[in-house]
Length: 447
Image 1: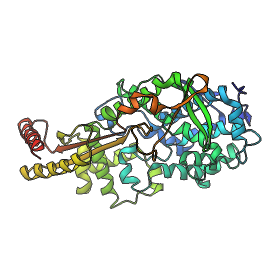
Image 2: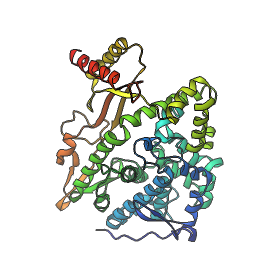
Image 3: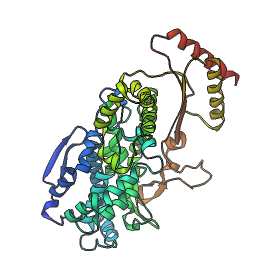
Image 4: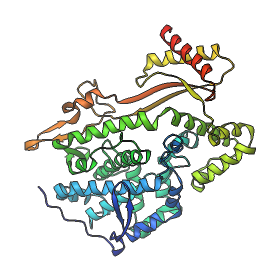
């Protein structure tokens, strides 16, 4: 076991003398330099962007923000870094020292870049987080704006370089982006922030579960972190897992599956996501949703606009704004289950057309929810393309892919996909809704 030398700090202002209490992780410590980033308006805006958009309409406690999630990811990533450094600090130090500009303080600089990348990985999120993202970022997603904010000298780039060291912002942006420009010797940092077994997933599963009041996202993350190791490969340092921690990683994947099915893609969450996307698409006809516009707004400013549009806005926007403000949503009349495939997708499309023909006086919405659960390579795969391997390190330093060892990964679906049809029927139209539901059920069997 290599000796771990706890990183010193390149400057007194990097010593974590500040702290904030977190309901998930306890105290989160940060330095004076990090405080200036946290207090910067570009990061502070995350206080007013909710983690789960309008999920509070079904889970009233889901009012937590991207701000607290970002702090939590920084804490988890740091704990993971320290856990593997205790075991393999010499290997990490040797690796990081090869990065340009890191030779004078390899562990200190790598750890600081990791913390900043974890803290700022979501800084580009727009109002209502992922829910409105298809309308706000149809081509690139929020990650591209996060990278721009971090690297642009007129945004956070100059601030980061002045607080830490020249070139720091560039490294942070590379870790967030995972771009080809990311040095091979810093790939470990990218995987700790955003990979198959990462700080981002760990925090949002625990935090969202807590605030929604459900147990689906909880797992023994402390045990998983303690089980982390690193191994040297042709691609650089990669995360590995001590065999004793296999069940904690399995639990993370099961938590991800259950949170996707029960929270993130809940039928009511999906219909309000639909309204938000429709609203923002209509808004784009009158307002250019530029990066500057996205940065200047948040959930509060946009909800004020939505509330105003619900009363007196243009008719195209008013329609969707009213749905949100008055919680007047479509009701689900058909659901395929969680294993929609190519064949059943075609059948689902036909069903939607049949229902529209049968009930021309009712407005229907068709939705397909889909999410990736994991990418772990298993013996059932014909190819390793697009697959990930987490190495299990057992007694005598034996190595085996977790997909070979775990029955969970060989059984749990890699993807969740569910088709739903919603009807514009009020809560009081019970009999009418029942008629549609019964027709949909009969028709599905006949198709």
